[in-house]
Length: 129
Picture 1 (spheres, rainbow, N blue to C red):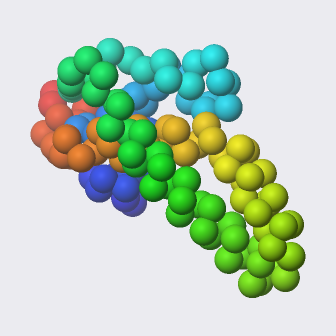
Picture 2: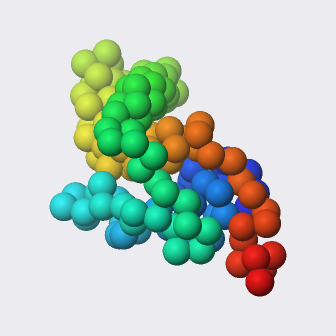
């Protein structure tokens, strides 16, 4: 349904050009030893994921923004909707950020790489044959 959009590539972790292959060697972000292990290139369209050395350092800025967004959302839900005290709300922020750290790290890389690549329908398996 969303295939062909940047959101599809961001949320699924697939190649930003063809949306056919996962960029990561391990699909589970909670296997912390392999959280950053990526394929060098897409086996379908041959897109090189690491454009230059230290390419994903820019993802740290995206990660910061995502962390702030999750923290604000957690605070609003915990304090205003659930009615927790300020201290309990801040503890819930810490818990949520620690639990979602692997997801935030992957999402930030996915968002960062999608700034530099666009979907190309002609690179998909159906259309490249």
